[in-house]
Amino acid sequence: MNLLQPQGKAEALAMLAEHPDAIPIAGGTDLLVHWPVRPAEHDRTYVDISRVAELKGLQWTDAELVLGGLATYWDIVTDQRAARELPLLVRAARQVGAVQIQTRGTWAGNIVNASPAADGVPVLMAYDAVVVLESRRGREEVPLADFYTGYKQMRRAADQLVVAIRVPRRPYAAQVFEKIGPRRAQAIAKIGLAVTRSAAGWRIVAASMAPTIRRCPALERRLANGPAPRAPEDLVPAIEQDVTPIDDIRSTAEYRKRVMARVLFFALPELQA
Ligand SMILES: Cc1cc2nc3c(=O)[nH]c(=O)nc-3n(C[C@H](O)[C@H](O)[C@H](O)COP(=O)(O)OP(=O)(O)OC[C@H]3O[C@@H](n4cnc5c(N)ncnc54)[C@H](O)[C@@H]3O)c2cc1C
Image (cartoon, rainbow, N blue to C red):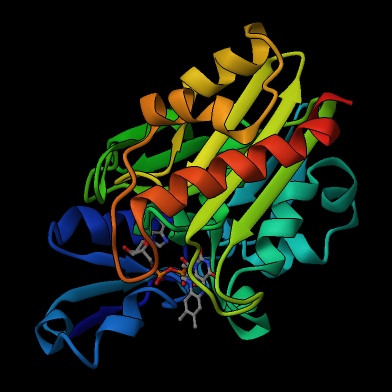
């Protein structure tokens, strides 16, 4: 294994440009899990970005919250303004693993790991977050809702780092995040649902319901324009247009659809208040 340890962002980007097969490593909480069972993965070049000061922490401006490329869940859990303004970030962060993972794991790592069951991605997507990518070739911004192109496929080139995640600040009429799992901590979501309603409209984002985390445009239209649903089942046709859940070790497709409909239906009084 070849481990490179840049001390700054420019050095990290140079290393990624010079080693096209190199993999960035931040908290390591996704990457290291596979190492004992996949020894071949050790034999790579890793760029350990954990010392790059420019990527750490978060910053509030008048218009947005900017999460650095190394911002952790704990940075959000301990930020009082996040609790007031973007509470779904805090709610999701508190449900990622346990404290040890929350202090090491990063939002950017959650995005690039691209698990369909991730907890950080749905809330960021429900807040219209934008992924800021940088390489020696320049800077690029991609809305998170457009970032994934297929299972574990995304609009990020090998030499690009996620250097920031921009989250717009706006007033929300309602915000909900629900993670359905076998227990409260250290669980992988059977279903995740993040919903926001603001002047920008409805954002309904589903996790563990498709090969990627994704927005649900049919459901968003149904709630914006359709008659008020009278039972959870009224939401199922729109859910079936938006997502394609599978049967797997954690759940069945049918269970996922029915529970997603129920979770959304019973959250509606809060969402429409
Ligand atoms: C015990 C345990 C419990 C967990 N529980 C949860 C949970 O409840 N919910 C959940 O969503 N996740 C969970 N995870 C997964 C993991 O903690 C998160 O996905 C975390 O956000 C990953 O961040 P990291 O910095 O550790 O990523 P890493 O492991 O360092 O990297 C993950 C991927 O992102 C890439 N990467 C990292 N940073 C950057 C960057 N700045 N630019 C470009 N690429 C980058 C890496 O190359 C790699 O492909 C758990 C993991 C463990 C071990």
